[in-house]
Image (tube, rainbow, N blue to C red):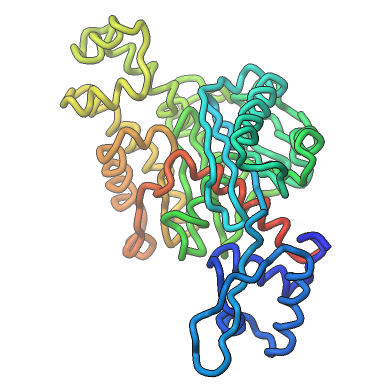
Length: 393
């Protein structure tokens, strides 16, 4: 029997052991509505399959001590988080603890074949380090809309050559295991739900601000993807009809104002106009500017850089405020590369949301930075595939 042939009770037990770690039979019985005899049958079946193992004696609660059980330590999941300008690859155990993690710069515009050659080379490095001789499943994140059932990117604005590429099928053949593919910000949301700031929250928004801007929507503990996989594509909400052109073909989108490329563009323009000595010196030294340069200039007290961050945060907060009024979440998590811009960005977003949304929606609404940083996506990827494998057949 494999994980995917588990019944509903076994699937629930597997998820509990994944999320809680080793548990006694008594503790598991307290969490699932099964008689002691039925629980014993289901656990014994899982032990027979090798999906769970005995793990020493549990603490005594009076009477005969029982054994702890845990997810088999031999289980291995692979998480791959492909961003616009970088890729992260990680191996976890069955409890989704990261055993090894690699990150490299990578331009997604080189196309799927070149990207997956690099990904497989990184996977080989992790295997060579002795972290895995097999994978029980893999989750893959890409920075664009995904037709989730087929694992295929759909018309991604910043991913030329990826439209319709069979990511799930191709990688499943290469890796020899089940594969699921999702949008990168959905995986960031799942990561924060699994091991980050959203652990106890059932309804929340996860905003990723990087080269692009997207939103993971979690409703009653489940990711909402929409009919065609484009739910949460907030970077292409128009914030200014007279604004700059966007990669999607429209004008004035949020992403065209405050994605990573937009921030670098505006910083260069201000440096060349002589508005910022700090930015101008960085431009002269490197020949280009990045979001990191804007962050460093702001940290040095440069008013122009600080103003760029405040304006971007305010526009982003304007969009988030509308989402909050519509969705009424219990938490808003902010993640992605541009969170390196720090407290100035977060404060600007908070100010706009609290000012614009109704008090009923914001009265007890935390708006916080994610806890997992660059590993949120790979943790979410392994959560995605383990949810699939630890579900009823």
